[in-house]
Amino acid sequence: MRLDTWRLELKTAFMSKVLTAIQPSGILHIGNYIGAIEPAVESQRDNELRMFVVDYHAITVPQKPEELRKNILTATATYLACGIDPKKTLLFQQSQVPQHTELAWILNCTARMGELERMTQFKDKTRVRGETTTVGLFDYPILMAADILLYDTAIVPVGEDQKQHVELARDLAIRFNRDFGETFVVPQPKIREVGARIMGLDDPTKKMSKSASSPKNYLSLLDDPETIRKKIMSAVTDNEGKVAFDETRPGISNLVTIFSIITKQTPEQIELDYIGKGYGDFKKDLAEALTLFLLPLQAKIKTYLEHEDELIKILNAGSTRAREEAEKKMEVVRKRVGVCLNQD
Ligand code: TYM
Image 1 (cartoon, protein in one colour):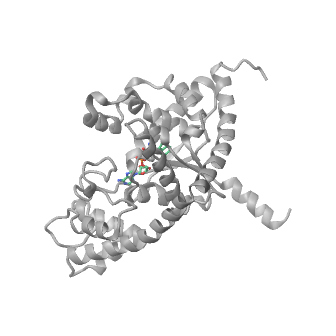
Image 2: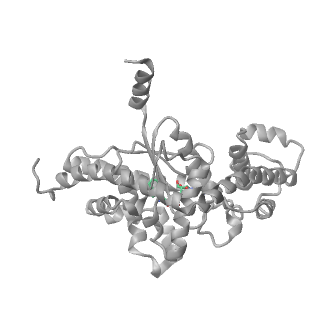
Image 3: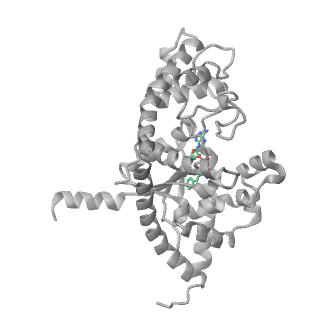
């Protein structure tokens, strides 16, 4: 065997199956980038990555159809602009792979009401939506479990807010394997140490969220330089005036975290650089660093969006491959459950 073939086989043997996804619900913010997109792009080099747009998760809250269509394309363009390479990574659209909803139904019949009622995100969203909470919103973690389990996923890079959902996917996999025989790989969440929970700029005690009531809460990946400057300069900090990464001071720690990830410096390095300087200088530099980081990304997103047909082609090609892979797993699942009448 040639040395390069041998190396490739060795590498493939040690590659993990990694999977992650994002909802196309309008704004992708710097928290989504730091918590999920950057770690996924990183993992693409040495692992088998599946990355997709979860449009059926997005409709658990009302969406305008024309806007949803646009947001699916923008999310895809954003993945590509951030470095997702469809030659290496399986990039697709969730709704184009009906096996996701099929497996979600089967898992629904194994999950317990209490497990879903305990989900923090559901409880938070119910508080806001009250009577208008949909059954889809309640069931959302089951569809996410199906997303993960269909592809023998070992690792799921997500922000901290999704950890509980990945743990539910683990529990459902273990239960299914116990009751019906070994079928699913039990996945692990991968949560980065620094940046797993980027906090709101207007309220650093709560996570940055695209559903926040004020746009001052988040920094969209599509914000223009003036908006970035205004949002960063008005970000809530404290009265101490010392730039530091200190968990008892969530506002400034959050900004140092963002700065550290965007500029690839450690928080300690940043603390040293700002000794004797105030928050004003630091925020100005952070706004500049974010602008330098986001402008080229935005230019790439724009170019991809100008070639809508290409984007659709990439998604369709990925979805076709994903359907083939997902169908193989569903054939096993249907047999295990007993609904497949063919014996071979
Ligand atoms: P979504 O669309 O709300 O968020 C996408 C990803 O961004 C991360 N994230 C954050 N990370 C750090 N700080 C924040 N403030 C922040 N806000 C969001 C999220 O943790 C997530 O990783 N249910 C999922 C999407 C999904 C999924 C999946 C993920 C569906 N199926 C299968 C992984 C695997 C969601 O709504 O993420």
